[in-house]
Every structure is written in structure tokens, then in C-alpha cells.
Image (tube, helix red, strand yellow):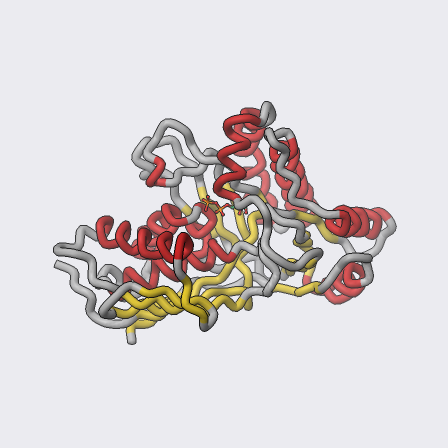
Length: 340
Ligand code: DP6
């Protein structure tokens, strides 16, 4: 029998997909949140969520020093209920105080749900007596549980580069994430180029469901993504930077084509997004520092480059009109758990 033993503190780093997840598998239990396509991501150093879960007299959720109520808080408490059930814990779930800090840029659209749900899952599992340390099997189990909160969170259990396979089993048992070999000393950086401030308008969850239902490009997106996943993993293993960059851009633009063909159209970019993409391409063609772009359900651009070219490329992109900030981010570490 598991009982809340103690307060638990977890840190999980955010991640950016190089091969994208967009769309949920139809015809299976929605609670499992199974992706229609696999994905491959880089975990981000610095950009992380730290979450403490402790037994309390009533459920409460505090984010960045502010009490959160309504839908976002309900989502957190529902995830605690889910973890209590998944852990086959007995009796009613104890009430919890969840206190989170996002060490993420203030601008939205930077995958806080990935690090957020990963950290919440780990800390709650620690608090409920379902995890004492993050050995390989525990990490894999918590990754599957984190996915039920948010698909991209499944990848934030590990550092470096992570592959999440979609699988085909109805119970989700073969939808698994695993770390890929570290590319060091093949050192890469991701430049996070901020092109806006403020929250995005259509969240990923609703957006991808609309694409599945209305985008004529959605079947082609799903069908072609397995090949991208294998190509990206092969490029990573071979340290073939240009091959990795090419498949990364292809996956990104295919996802955005699918988004644009959704009804109503999902257009996450602004003018500066396009200017940054053009600048990266022009530099690449002109023999300048080499970068490859990706972007998610928001206007920011993330640019993969070699570590030694990161300062020069960041300086070029900071000068593009509409760019607010360029962050240089290295591959981040594994998520961690501390029982306090
Ligand atoms: C565009 O993980 O936020 O960032 O599973 O509905 O919570 P839910 O979606 P989420 O989707 C992320 C989509 C993406 C691409 C990616 O990270 O792979």
C-alpha cells in the first residue's frame, strides 16, 4: 500500500521537438493521450520547471508565486487523481499543495506544459510513495504517466535527445520514450528566437484535434512522419548535422502546412517569424553560420546550430526586425527527484 510519505521536489527540463508531434490517435481511450505520430526532441538546459508536492489540508496550486484557480488548477488536480489511480493507491487521494516555478522565458509558446507535467508527475509520484529514485524502469513508467497530462511531457524525463514512439497497441503499452545516445563531443545548441510577447491564441491540444478532423493534409502528415523519425535518429547517431537539420525543417514545415490547411486555419506565425526563417536560410546559403529552423504552436523560432557557431548566429538573428531576444540553450540534463 502506498501512502503519502513526504514532500517531494522534482525538476524537469523543457524540450523542443526536432521531429514533431501533432495529432492524437483516434479510436482509443482519450485518457491515454496517445500520439498519432512519434517525435524526437532535444531537452533544454536552463528552461525548466521545479515543482514541490506536499500533503496539505486542501488542494492548492501555486505557480511562480501566485495562487492559480479555475481550469489550469483543475487540470493539475485531475492529474494528481490520475496518478493516484494509476499507482493503485488505496483510499481517497490525500489533498496536496503543488508549488511550481517555471524557469522559462516570460513569452508564451515555449513548451511549459512539457516540463510542467513532467515535474508534476515526478513530484506527485514521490509524494504518493510511487517513486523513490529515478532508475530506468521508474523513469519509463513516469514518462508514460506524464504523457497522459501532456504528450510532449513524456520526453522531458530524460536529458539530451529523446525519441517517443507512437506505438500501435490500444492500451498504449508500446508508446514509449527513450533517450538517444548523447551527441557530445558533437556539441549542439538551440537558439530560441523570441518574436512576440504574450499568450498564444489556440492551444496545441485543441489545434491538433481540429487538424485531425478537418485538414486534408493530416493523413499525409501522419503517414510520412515515421520516416522522418528514423532519418532524424540515424542522423543524430551519425552526427550528420546537415541531415538532422534538413529532416528537422521538413518535419516543421509539414506540420505547419497541415495546420494551415485546418479549418479554420491555424496560423501560429507572425511577420517576424518569417523574417527569422528567411535570415537563417540566407545565412546558410551565403556561407554564414549554419542553422536549421523549427517552430511550434507559437510564433517563436528555434534554430539548431553547432555550439561554436551559436554566438555569431545569435548576433545575426538578434538584429532581425521584430526579434525581442535570442537565448542560446544547450542540451539539458535528466529530470530529477528529491524526497524532502
Ligand atoms: C507543436 O504536448 O502540448 O509542441 O498532448 O495535447 O498536451 P498535448 O499537446 P502538447 O503538444 C506539443 C505540440 C508541439 C510539437 C511537439 O512538441 O512535438
